[in-house]
Image 1 (cartoon, rainbow, N blue to C red):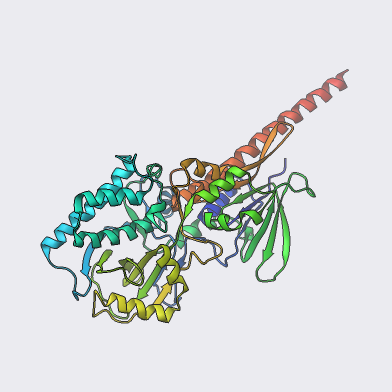
Image 2 (tube, rainbow, N blue to C red):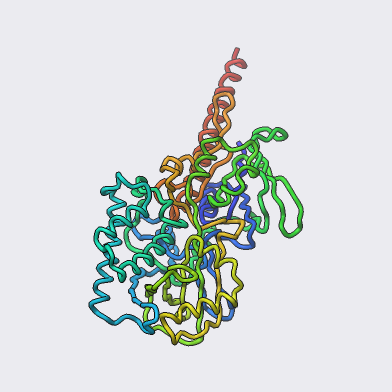
Length: 482
């Protein structure tokens, strides 16, 4: 039997893990198609100057947990170093011109932040969630019981809410399903930074796949999974963004790894025939919000410790909301820089602003807390919401969805002929993982899962064909004997 032909749509970590697994199992006829000029998808290590070792992560930031985390295991086995993020917290009040040094106030706010984290843990445990639909209402009611009419802790609460929006990948916690909040499973061991960049993990995976397999700068326009003009094949319609030419690639199996945001936007035109109603409902119900990072670099060394989360406590919401600030060090050149995290409407608005205008307005805003902060030498804004190949951040279970939708996302489109069911279009990516959605390791594991599905199917087919050939040979021998 000939080896199957595979097309993988998307060269993110799920597409790469799928391709690498297939290649290791002897399946070499693989094409990985991506519209970008790079691999990685939502993992994007930016190296602005080839003569400088500085880099930052525009997309995924950390490996979330060490124990039971496949990406951490891959990093360790490839001698890719990672370090645990032991964050410190600094408090700044608007118009106080310096970091808060009032020990009583700091202690009170530390206790309040611990209380917020306790409420999140109670939500994960399902404690007293029956009367609430969303995570936001649960947090608000639990917080108010402890800190009613306290203006100082109210300011902290606003900052923590934005930070939680970023963690969830949502525009507002009002959309996060509380009853399903225990669906996500943590890997213990803390968040880890890869000291020389997450692109090293991508390159490790890509090195296991033939270079000729990668078709970059190409967009998939349509996946015809009921192809009439080549029986049993899936027809993948591809547009070359450089040559402006179209082509059709035929495959036995197609693995779709594009982000949920892309499926929300394009599923009606991407698949022919249309997706089953159950999968369409899952795509439309699951949440996929907006998270934007702004990277600010400075000529001077402004900090002497990292990582530090700076809580900026405001009198009123600022132009950019209650964004979070992280002091980060690039381990490659020891440069300290700021990463600002925005969510929801503020994240979308920041993506639209011109860099120089944003640089000035953010500096003016930061000077309300740190008057001496200089003008940054450079700014970089991630634009995942406006990026047509992403259309947002990462997946969460919304108030309109259930954990079943995650499993529905992972179900293949199959064809049954003469009792034999063939998975023709398969789905991978973090939005298809039942417990590790929104993470790199969830995406990685899903790619391996679908590759294993293809390998197992073709092994079964090979055995059946061998058994059939042996029966035919035995029958022929008996006839000859007669």
